[in-house]
Length: 197
Image 1 (cartoon, rainbow, N blue to C red):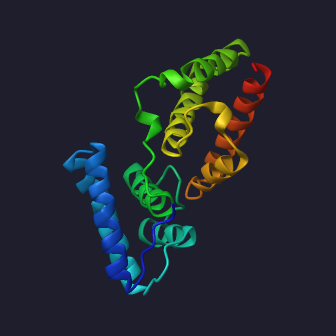
Image 2 (image 1 turned 30 degrees about the vertical axis):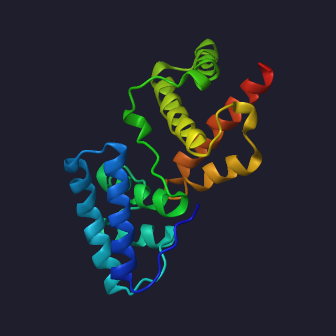
């Protein structure tokens, strides 16, 4: 569900950000967190206004982060808040929702996916995958689970190729390494799910 915003850059982007901040408040994000993210968004508005930007693209995101922070989007040198702010904005524009920051998610998996995902992680452990790596795989699964529910997929066997493609597209703003690692996670998860019936 791609959101449509048009007009002068300072108008469409500010409207997009107003909608996004309302969405975050509805999701339970604190005012302090939203203000911290908004600091990056305000700089982005200025950047887009100066460059008379009419479309929000991954290239624009990368150019903004490079010119403002001297780094590539997704680099560890870039503030985590900056990367998160850009990814949130991109998620909202492309899909009308924001994916939770799975790396700090402490909840367990939902009852619908718990057996599959925990079974998969235990399978990794049995294949000598380290606990540090397990934590990374778990965080990727949390983000994927959130996407599944937001897409109305409440059983794993409802998953279709176009859902997988849409999820991979949602990673467009991440570094190539992060995208590759996520694709590898999905490939191994699907192999495990197939083997387990």
